[in-house]
Length: 307
Ligand SMILES: Nc1nc(=O)c2c([nH]1)NC[C@@H]1CN(c3ccc(C(=O)N[C@@H](CCC(=O)O)C(=O)O)cc3)CN21
Ligand SMILES: CC(C)C(=O)C(=O)O
Ligand SMILES: [Mg+2]
Image 1: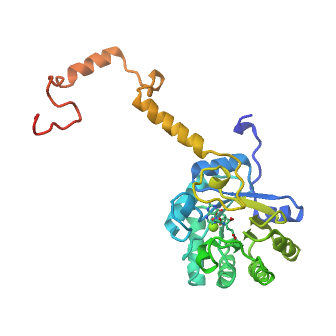
Image 2 (image 1 turned 60 degrees about the horizontal axis):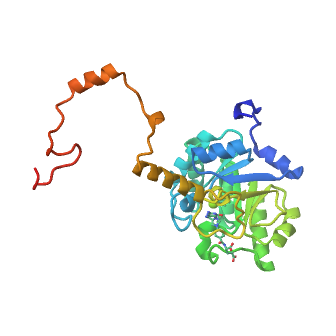
Image 3 (image 1 turned 60 degrees about the vertical axis):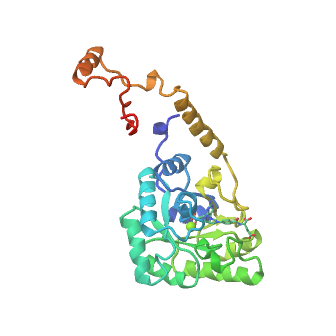
């Protein structure tokens, strides 16, 4: 069945996500960073697409999420917008783009809505981020929170490590989650939190919780596009499940192309454009005389010795 024959799914809304939580209908979320990955997420029928600042690592090759800029994230988000219709489009606000003041947070969030077409933004952590979330929501922009392993501040939490593994730490995660809920967030990401801790918190929260490495008790799951497709070369976290191993076939395809070029198997006749024979004859008359033997071959500058 071609995509055109499938009836259009209604757009996913924030109210619709709340309904999914109350009806215990799991929410599927995936990251995307460009037009083709957005089209794939659309065709796959996911509920939420996140333009994650993980782009810093998966797309831009940085070692953490910290270096990605607002302008880089805007460019990626705008590309995803062009490939997406149905899922809710959430954009990560990058490190340094919302922490300074409510004014900075609102200004940055507005750019993602106005310039890139995001439906909502996501910010990390409790603490001062709770006030930022409240301010952005008050400015009319939906906010998703993110607690547990917060990669933007990995250096202050001991690296890319699970959070809330002691009762005391788990209570701190819960307090952040509850504060973000009270600040008006429409959903939260729980990242790298023991399943038992997540399970204990779920009945105490009323908004959709999307987990990544937070066990099965959450209302939904999120995975990074490149991780689930097997095209990310870096270390895979414990929570990653690979649904495909696309890196090897991609390398094989590009290597086959290079080999075809080197052995003159590409391009074949079906890849060529044709020209009427009479036009070719006319062209030869119009072009300068071919070079004489010993002259420079076209495109190659003669060396002083042979010139
Ligand atoms: N490709 C990719 N996938 C991600 O899920 C992801 C990113 N990049 N970049 C931003 C953050 C970083 N994330 C990460 C990265 C590594 C681990 C990891 O390897 N953790 C170890 C140690 C856990 C522990 O001991 O507590 C693991 O084995 O899971 C976890 C989350 C999640 N996010
Ligand atoms: C892993 C998800 C939640 C994320 O924040 C990202 O991809 O940047
Ligand atoms: Mg992120």
